[in-house]
Length: 245
Image 1: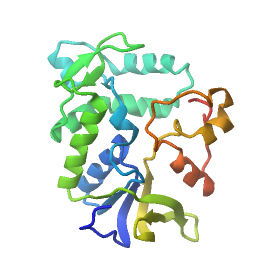
Image 2: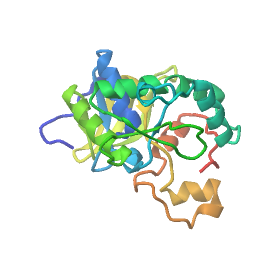
Image 3: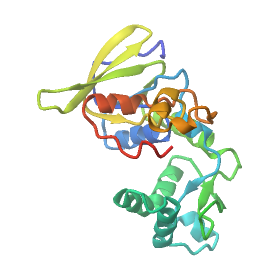
């Protein structure tokens, strides 16, 4: 945790996890004028995103247009659906596809320039966007987004593990309990976003849902232990597709 900063007792929003999702959400929250904090249990920022290496998929992007690549959202949707064995959450996939080009442009606004294109599995055209510098996309994204998040005035606390989601009498989540090097603290918020990733590094959860994979080595970062999934389950969240790992 930064020594010069103190965790406040209240924020508009608390973001748990500092990978691509958490950092992006923090920037968008600041755009909306919200007072927001990122809590990261690991000693460093970036989560699993910092290990991503291929590219960020998008269709109908300005980068594709510049390279004369004619692509469309329908093809991206159909090819991704096929790649997911038709088991994808279709509404979520549609949202993802339709917002993919905007996401590339939004990142550019913050100096994150994914201007190199390549083709990867299941694509009919070049759709994977990578840094022109050829740096691994994940580290490029998280390092630059971290700088932008700090510039926007968002506090990021590392070594801060959320251990409980707090609820009001109606069951709405209204804060968290967090373990820090200064002890356990209760923080209230209007919204809590779990951006904690999966459980690829948790032998315990893998053993429960996919015992056949328990002896495999993982390329996930050591913090990918499904903590957010456990937090959500404790307050009654429904888990789905847990065997898809």
